[in-house]
Length: 217
Image 1 (cartoon, rainbow, N blue to C red):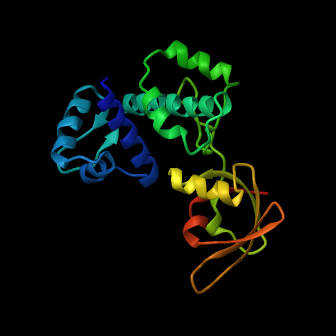
Image 2 (cartoon, rainbow, N blue to C red):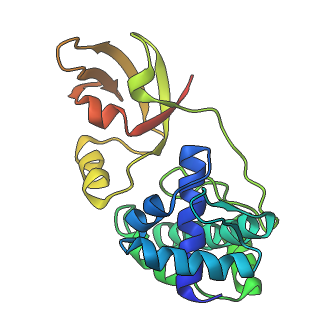
């Protein structure tokens, strides 16, 4: 596959995972920042390779071959993110764009050795699951912080928004994967949330709380 074909497959994979349904060409065009006509041309190519199910004016989904191929691209991306953070001391807000380049390396042997070298991690630095060499994913039960009730406590296990700006904000607030967060209360006026993080009380917006995943403890 070309780099462009791999990027389309990965985008369709993320969209179908988020929406839990078939996706439209317009949704793909938006995430790929291109015209719908260009998306249609690419979908025809991917369909010929048995990577997507595509019929004009209907939704798009990945075939089993397409799902596995997409998972392998995601696997490479997330393993490289772990490598960059753990071995080269990049911060979690710096690694996405670099991993976007590294994910297109074709060598399966290299990626499997990288996986072993890193100790076969199951999550990337943002808490997203890493598919194994067979495409299997270990899922954990998690909730958005905004969904918790007063006095519930969770451990931060991931972020919904992986933008550099959001991750830098979390760094400033001392919130990271593994942080213990106690949900104290929600303000009815603007839905802002008062939390306690490692014995520090903070007030965060509903937008922030809606982009943090926690596992209840």
